[in-house]
Image 1 (cartoon, rainbow, N blue to C red):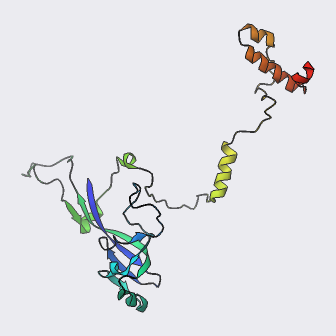
Image 2: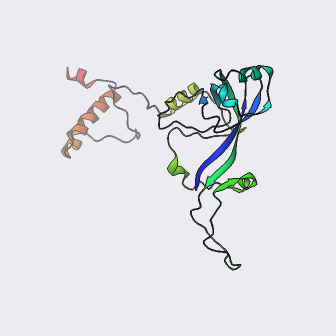
Image 3: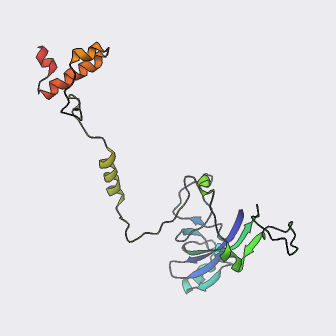
Length: 226
């Protein structure tokens, strides 16, 4: 079971400067496009590739610079200056886990069954061997979770307005004349007379049949009564 993890970010400045920033140093940076309140239950603190962050230059004092322009060097002397950066990459550095169960252990060579199930801290090359099972992923999903999808060449890309019009034409009920009931599907089947239907104790259906017959004949029952 994963308890927590530590990441490092590769961020890019508008002038092309890039640096590697530890997650602890990036906590004071805010999502420039997120308008949710900090107290919202859907507020996420994690970072993702392509995210736009904004915050003071003091967050980059301990950064490891890969490329630093003269303009960015000048900003380092102004720690309270707010800047915007884009996240180019997010890399997991440490993974803190807790062993819950073990499927099998070979004790023939004298291994102790009370040995630690798994190391608490996973780092380095051992991270490449970690596999996420996600058995209970559907139980943990909630509104606001981010998911990623890679577009395929066969995907049909439409705008939001086109999708709304398609849904409206597909799911909207057909419009009928409110003064004339809809004709039955089996037009060849003769409707029962009103008197016969009424004899079964359902006079309301008899009235509906009379109105339907009047509409099919092109006349109005009210005008006929006059």
